[in-house]
Image 1 (tube, rainbow, N blue to C red):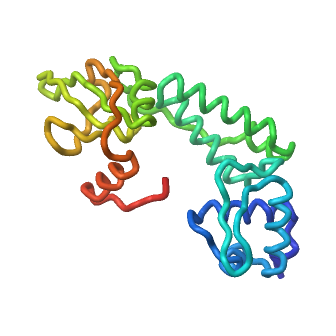
Image 2 (tube, rainbow, N blue to C red):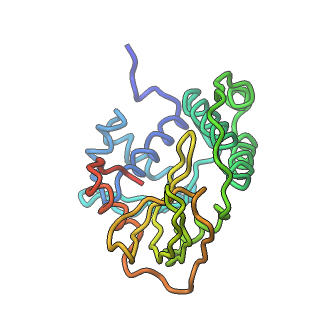
Length: 237
């Protein structure tokens, strides 16, 4: 019978890090031990091991634990299916996103491959999951990295946009997300002109200029409100 206590130490530490990252607030040792299937004594020992490796885990028994972001457990460990998901995702990005995202995806895979153990690196390099050809994406007039930068910095943008009839209008928008579909890319934003959420196909954006002014709400709050308006379930992002 499988005993979680007998799994390799590296697997246990990886599972513990994953469990901690799934909790944004302090979580008790009892809950963590139950989630990863080990005894509370083993859990406390593994927390001490991670702290010795440099993980910024704060808390203590009876209060709860929280992991500050930014720590990676060396060597980086993934399951075979997680690696396949990463490779498939990067191949889709390379085929359907813009050039800078394609290069970033390839660079990220190279960084991951550099620190993977040899057996897992083989999974990365020989994955047989492929992305099939999709419909041709219309050519964009706007620079997508500019849109992504405005989203990251929560900056207002002035768009010149042509609707489906070809009628042009100037809009000031609060961009908060960029959606990639198989055949089109869509900028999501709050439109000051319409006083509501609007979807802008990037191939119909004639020009886009990011201004120095940050919009008054946080991107996460806008995304949450948009999901509620569209009836889309909340997710962790």
